[in-house]
Length: 151
Length: 122
Image 1 (cartoon, each protein chain N blue to C red):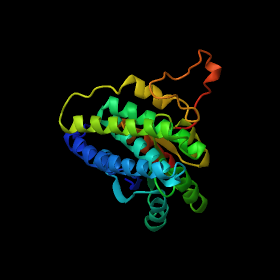
Image 2: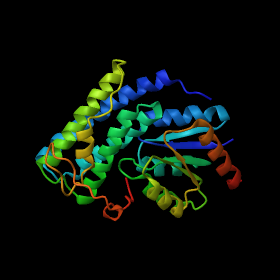
Image 3: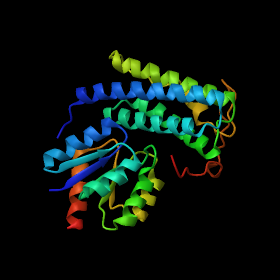
Image 4: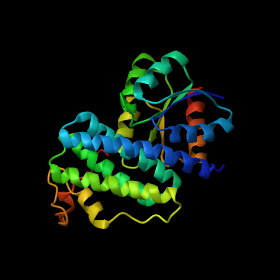
């Protein structure tokens, strides 16, 4: 069977707009309170939801970026707070990039992969955010990167 | 054919599951948008099967599964998981969920999984 992709594209745009609005609101909340549990949870769930919808429609750049953001927020959830303003800035940049990608879908423009340096900053450990523009510190030793158990 | 409760906070996903399984003759008896609603609607509707998203507000899908199974040990629940949720799926299966389907959904795979679970439940 095949699904009506035009219909799901329309639903995606509606839901993504709502989710991005909630994410923006949550980030503004975290600006005031870095340990805002509700805001942290909202960002995690909204990123997860956008990832699943985008993957269902084959919008891989959106799914990839949302997945990275979801993973980052899972780390923030475990830590119980956004570490500092540098980490918050990365999250704002990720949201901005997601908004631009969703706008591209709405305008029927070709989707471009997210900026590599943004993806790298999102992937940096949440308890040690690299300064903006700095490459993440990675080790060649697989043992230094324990398998993630939750995302 | 089965009476199905869909639990997912995303309307997109609820509609997709509905569109995949209704043509198979299943009846969607309810839709829950969070884990608390999922538990409440299960009690109210007594569906034959629940498709349960893992990440939901108010109460996670995992918590909802545990809550439902505590009162209804024979409840037939299929988890809806996504990339990177392997450990959560394992937790749900250990708690008593019957099987799982993976997002993005492949319609044939969803239909086959639900068929298998319902046959075993008979």
